[in-house]
Image 1 (cartoon, one colour):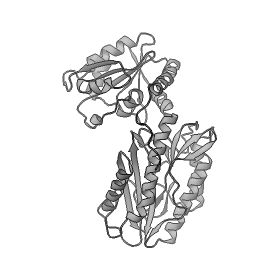
Image 2 (cartoon, helix red, strand yellow; image 1 turned 180 degrees about the vertical axis):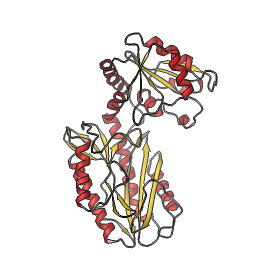
Image 3 (spheres, helix red, strand yellow; image 1 turned 120 degrees about the horizontal axis):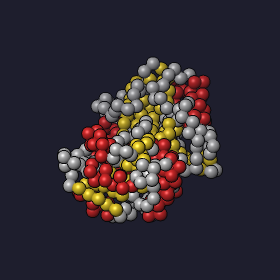
Image 4 (spheres, helix red, strand yellow; image 1 turned 135 degrees about the vertical axis):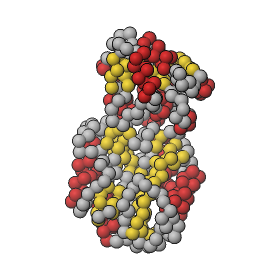
Length: 389
């Protein structure tokens, strides 16, 4: 196993991120951007805590058009934020149902919106505002006269292109998880449940060095599975079953996201053919992943193979997506997305097709776009459907 990358980032990494977002803020005439989610706050500050699991307290970071970020956070997080590169830290004792940081946040926003009188908040698809609706309404009243503009495209564009340090973390978690999948054929046991087999897999991944596998789903069925998001269940794996495991495992906050398919004792000709089709679709998608091409080019290449290979439908809606601090990030590989691929973009290739009524076959790999073409981050799956005896 390769040596793990150093955890965290140098200050220069955060300075570069800030410079990139501020350049786009200037073009869009935005004075300050409000961040509320775990991923956005960690991306610009380095503040890493599991406390976002609790819905009790809101957390705010302001990105000004000039200067370093300002953190406006519950007092319980002050010590942790002081360990980051952020210097301007304002706190209040939370939870406070009468004023949970709203006044403090509003005053800070008003002091920063002196040029364009404009606050950026991500509003569009895939964005989340992590504060109570009542508090947001109170905030807008307190900053009347300040325009609120959607900044989702700015935040997306900056995070779309990963630094080499980010790519190294994703590459590392992909390699660990690839090793886990390689070992899995010796661990999977017929006569045990999906849940038991997935538990063994997660325990093995932890022993190999993943920090966690917060996303680990499976599906199985005679001759194929019908869902890729609902398991694992207590269903017992039997002879003739096709079994998929899909995992989003993490190293230092960065995700991998790919799956592997297995057959037990035997596989139908239809399942073998479907596996062959989606494997070839992945190859075609990979071949399209060059700088200047688009996510829609990638989608069309994979979709064409599946249509010619006998697909009778699909329930997924896209054939892959962005990857990084979140299991799924923008963009989506769809026929209408048309995002232009750039060096440093990390994507999943995820062709999936229904090959019989109620039977799907899905395959996923992780890649990075480079100036010289795409690079596999996950170690490629078997060319033929693995059959476990």
